[in-house]
Length: 561
Image (tube, rainbow, N blue to C red; front, side):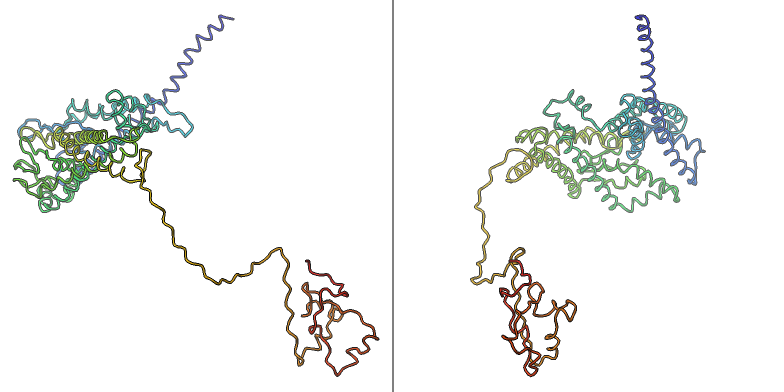
């Protein structure tokens, strides 16, 4: 028996492993399929766009094979990979590393959706989720499995992707986007972020980035708000500058190409580069500005001439060469506004108990404002690094803002402004006697309550009788006597219950309950004359003297007392 049990135990181990692998394999397989599908959809989007432009172009330089090579190269450029153009006039390969930020939305969104759907497994609410590591690994491997042949195919065209940049940027984008998708499928838990932040930040600073409830901390929200204000303000500056140079902007379309297909292609390229231009304008407002080639800088203090610039519509917004004027100096309002927004967020958080503390001190409030400005500077440095790059060699080796200069200028501008604003907001919130949050409160001034003036009552007031529901009903007043010349006197006189079939209760002489009282019986001795024997005299009516309810001869029911 023991041998049988031992044999059963030995055979159950491979069965359990097989069952475990069988349960895990659908998640890995779906992840591989989802990642490959995301890469294929991204390639399809760029291929359709390039093929439409190639078909509508009046001067196609190559066949459909060249258009497909360009589509694959642009798809890799959207991941941040640098391209190299080999067919130049000088024969020297020229790098092109300015990735349109708007195109990066396509692969990132597709990877995020694929990882999220894979982790959810297409299950309902009560079904278990696919393990996060399996879903993440499957999506990344499936995506890279399509990226490798696409990169090899694009290497045979006029625009060839750089092998080093492709090997670094594409896997990085896939790992980060797929990780956020799995994290979203699991309800955005704060555990992984706490582990990462706990390894690099102390506890007091960590709560400024990630709150105890798992939501972004005060400094993180303030930094995000400041970066949003800077980029949005840069877009406004770009729009104003393009409006001032509207003639040059329209002329650039005609110098680049002819016909509606060519103008449409240039317009689509400008739209894809709008986020880059907004970051450039924000860097210009911060002070460091941007480069239009090696040694050619554009700042609010002055702009240098760049003779090698191509006639591109967005480059028409570049300020004219020369020293800066007072109008150029007005762009300093943008970093001041962003610093005020960061300070407002930090000041409100210092009073409402952000970061797990009841009420912040002035030192902690100023430190949190400086830390938020540093986070905002890191975000702007990242955006500046992604928005620029080389467009050639020698003088065209560098285009766009310098990332470290933009990050340092952002931290300095916003650090000073945010600290002052945060302390001001904190003092104002503590000054108010009634505020939100559970922090300490200053004692409010005791003010005697005001009494509302009471109008005097009138001297004479008539009290209306109150209706009784269960009391004695009041007796009805007797009707007025009938005149002697009433034409219907004989009908009233001769009416009784016997003549009208029991309808005599409707007579006007009826009692309170609708019953007519009967007169007491009389004898001929006491009353020798009856009304019928005296036709000359008017007959006495029951309306002349109503009988009293307390008469001894009254045998009819009485109203309740």
